[in-house]
Amino acid sequence: MYATRASLYIKMKKPNAAIRDSDAASKINPDYAKGYQSCGVASAMLGRWEEAFKDLQLALQLDCGEKLIAVLKKIEPNAKIEREKRRRAEAQAKKQEQSSDSSSSRRAEGMPGGFPGADQVDQAAYETAKKQEQSSSSRRSGGMPGGFHGGMPDLIMNDPGLTAAFRDPEVMAAF
Image (tube, rainbow, N blue to C red):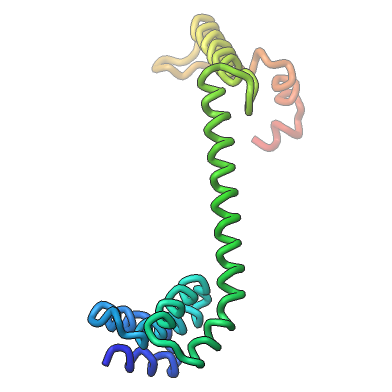
């Protein structure tokens, strides 16, 4: 009953329902070719060529028929293309995984690779920021009670490019 309904779903162009029913038919009777045939045709309708090819091959092993052989011959080229695309994608993913693993292990060991001297650059930036913070907090003078100090922050005041920009009337007009 499920296999027959699956073939009707295929005629109605409802491949997902056909797959659902053909799977149920295959679970009830795994030796019934019509369930695998319906599943293969429905998978082909969805563009799942490799899955369709496998189901139709299994149906062909269980029950040989001229119509089944003709459908299988039409699906086989698409299944080969899909299989090749999947193989290439897996190879590419494996290659990227290997390259990311090697560069991250080199970085962890302090060896050159990927981003040269990443650890030293990070450490130097941290130390510079820490020194600037200490010098600006020790030189704060005046200001308002409650922590509001007057004037520009030391980081801006010590940068000649920024202080010149703040002297420009057009820049100040933006504020």
